[in-house]
Length: 306
Image 1 (cartoon, rainbow, N blue to C red):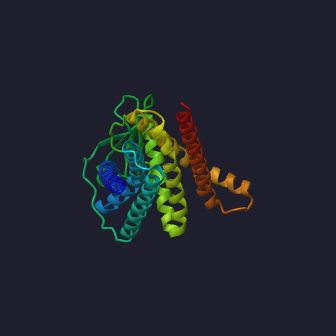
Image 2 (tube, rainbow, N blue to C red; image 1 turned 90 degrees about the vertical axis):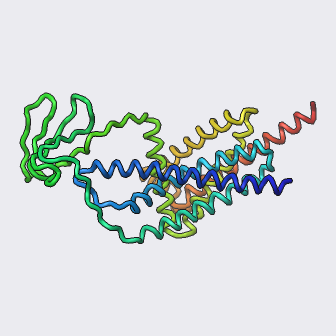
């Protein structure tokens, strides 16, 4: 019976991770395709390079989502807590390492240059938004000569002509509305920065990736006690999702150059700065596990007294 439960847990984690990874990669690929289509001048990109970038972005979010959903599943199925955490930790690291390995070697594939999309002729107007008070740039020679002569329309000022000598001025993208809420924008940035950290750690070697990804996965799995905080599985999953979003923001803060420099000066060569963050993950995860054990023991003793 126990073996059957854990076999289902393994299958469930694999399905959730694969579905989440493929779906998020496709969504990010479409977003990158739109960004590429509206760039001026068009950037030499290929579908392969955009797929690799989308997969890098989707890796960390798929990992976090799979851990949260799988731990919630293990609690609902009443699997043994210790073995469930070990199982989810192992699968998480195997998937993250395997995908990072594939993406790292795909980056060595030489890209083929693709022509840009023709989006207009002479006199095309570019602006940053669809409002009434934005600056607009009129390309007199069209997108065939994006750095050539242009006319700049600034609200409240007369039209300004700029010749080709002002080619260093940035051209705004083709207008696409962006009504994404600020919370989702910040979350997307946190996901991108954390995915970039995964890529950098893997590029530095197996052990840096093991220390960083392994300690992070251990800390995330240590949040399993949240899924036992109430008798409502959906509410527990929502609370865990908020906690995981907080971890994303915390990673962005701790991996910033200013904080890394502060940590390095504070440690004074006690341990390398690159290991400071993994050690903090391990310590925090250990404290969470101790708290979970003490809470379980206190609840067990209270039930025995009653």
